[in-house]
Amino acid sequence: MKLSKVKKLSAEKRLLYWISERESIRVKKEAGKKKPWTNDSILQTYKFCNVRRMDDRVSQWLLKNWFEKFYGHKNMLTACTIAREINNTDSLEEIGFPEVWNPKQVKRILEVRFERGLKVFSGAYMITGTLGGTKIEQVVDKVVTPIHKKKPKIDLSSMEASCQALLPFAGFSNFIAGQVIADMRWAVEGSWLDAPTWAPMGPGSKRGMNRLLGRPKDSPLKHNEFQSELLNVIDLVESKLPEISERVEAIDVQNCLCEFDKYSRTLFGEGRPRSKYQGIPE
Image 1 (cartoon, rainbow, N blue to C red):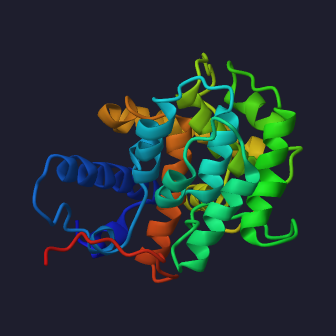
Image 2: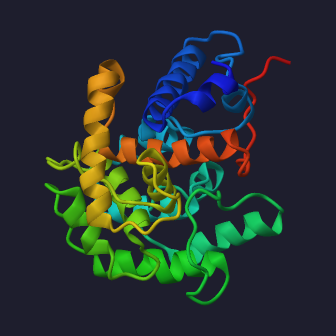
């Protein structure tokens, strides 16, 4: 669809358009079809997450190399925490799955990568930078090691309760805790009864929800308010895009709101995404 037409859509229809078009890109790409996978110039040019979180490249790598191979491992929470704090598959491959947690060795591996000028972290999930030391030291010593030592109790029936168990630890916001638990949901046996209905609110999904409901994008929004409104968005996706909704959970809809904010920001000339996407034929 031409951007001039997309701009004229209501916020609700624009969200549904983004979900449908982004999923169509994934399907065409995975089927081996030639570019362009869309005629939307924004989606051709800039990188957006998939509709379903577990379809993203890092999530697929983790699923194949860590979650399936070490399913149910006693150190899985440690693994999921270091995975999302780093979120770079080359770094994670060098570290290896933490069957035994060795913080000195992990730091050295990451420091050598940094000294060689290689990428250590992705910019997807950011820590506050206020914990003291280099970012590598903060992640390994101040975030991951305390989680490994104290091992908070994870409620395998509830993503929300499990997320709450992580919040007392340094470096964990509601959002990053939710991302770690979203990985645990695929890595250890559990019923995870609230996976279809609960997700953490992040800065991007907050803005996306505000845009969707016609509020200024930076309007204050409490998590309980976001959660109530999220259920309505889930119902919307289920009713309008039933084939797509069969594959997604609440965490995915939350993610779509974040990407919807990014797309809308670009569409209306408020800014541009940092990462480019090679969606245009050469």
